[in-house]
Length: 132
Image (cartoon, rainbow, N blue to C red; front, side):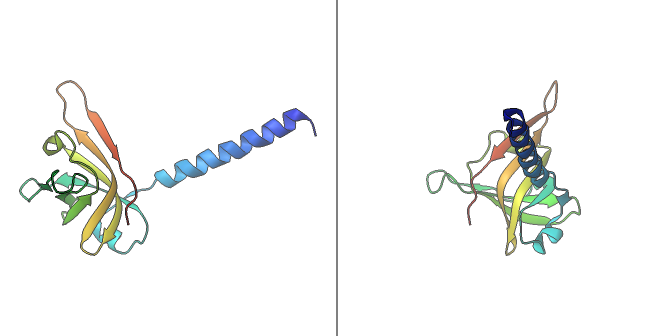
């Protein structure tokens, strides 16, 4: 077989792998009630419930941050993020969480915050490691 054919086959295989990987991240947004019935990772979009407690104690555990989020259906749930508390977290307008339900809590592995800005909208992406 000619070298050009081998290179073309490798390029097609790489393209298929990239598209498959990108398709996993193109999921639709769920609500907390939909996440209860789903065993895998889901994305939940909502707003920070500023009237509820936020817990972060870096002296005790710097990789544990809990807070409450109100989803698009108005349902509030406790969210546990196994990362440090992001800077200006309280200023976020919208939060997109990736993770799964563990009992009554949503355990987030990734978080995307849409923060207000004076001149433009900025997005802050926080990617965590998988914890079971």
